[in-house]
Image 1 (spheres, rainbow over the protein chains, first blue to last red):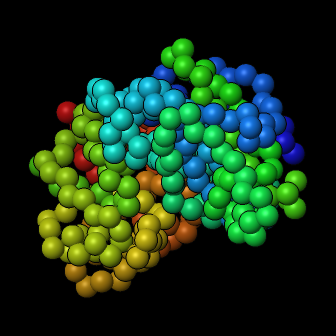
Image 2: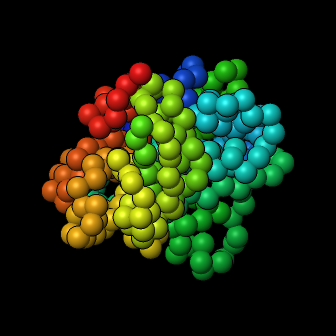
Amino acid sequence: MMETFALDITESTKTLFETMIMMDLNHDVASMADNTQIKTDVIGMVSFTGKCPGVIALFCSKTFSIKVASKILMSELNDFTSDVKDAIGEIANMIAGNVKTKLIAKYGDMHLSIPIVITGEGLSITAVNNHPMVAETTLSCFSKEPWLMMPFVSNNEKFSVGLLLRESNK
Amino acid sequence: MPKVLIIDDSAVMRKIIQRNIQQSGLLVDEFVEAGDGREGLEKATSNNIDLILCDWNMPNMSGIDFVKALRCSGQKNNIPIVMVTTEGGETKIEEAKGSGANGYLTKPFTPEQLRSKLGNFLLVK
């Protein structure tokens, strides 16, 4: 199942880069990562509900987010503005939308949340132990469960697209 | 020259669509923007709109509800509508067309795909 998800994420990310971002894209092998291994500046995430509830998130640096936002907005951006944050949300949304279309064929109808963008310096995602909301919600990336991480390289910058599924659905 | 209404809850996506239209060589005189179907309905009926591009998932009034509402309204109910959305399944496309949408474009799209879908409604340079 995880191999299928990894392929779906790769194809969706590739489609986006070939159509609206127009930057080179290479990918590496997918791996499972726990929250201690994830460090990033920007997280663009979209959660989904249905038979396979979970979260899809884009993890990247601020410099990479400015580059992709410049490309998709067709204008040269130099700072980490609100347009850059919104563009990262839309990029996460389009990847998630494409993955969703592939999953619907296999698992039935699903719904996506609006995209959420979190920014900071060297962000990590840490599970809140014993917090009942974390176990129940599909809207949070702060889970103790491992992420399926697809590493990519574009324009000499590394970034990842991760998928987190609720344990009961693995 | 035509006036195009873009209905999408993301301001940055409205900007992306506008720039793609400008880059693709399609002739548009003015863009009008709306953040959801309800605002879209107001702007569609109070402006001389030639083409509407509409997202599917939006707060207050979704894109599909907007299409149904405009087609059932007594005024401006024949403006062409192209859905521009991440919703890509065949069922959704059929539902949109059955509700009165004239075209369907899945995000992400290339400028060529955009020109091909909108070229039926707008002139190309």
